[in-house]
Length: 96
Image: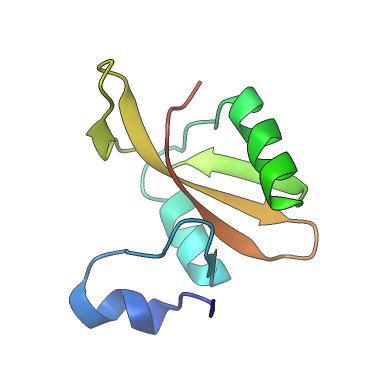
């Protein structure tokens, strides 16, 4: 799967990377600065690291909710960055 770029984002104005797709660092930075970010649940980070075979040095949820789950919890677009500087879209997740 190719890296999701700012150019991809600007095609229709919607941020639509696929789950676990690598995103350009500029997208990661822009999403981090939307509002103060929320932390990703620690247990969720651990599960994702194991599932993907990656170790994240930073994860976060975008500071604006995107939707709600069936239990009424807010879901946020989430992202992670690895030590080598690769950034990934981690899907819609709960924050802590």
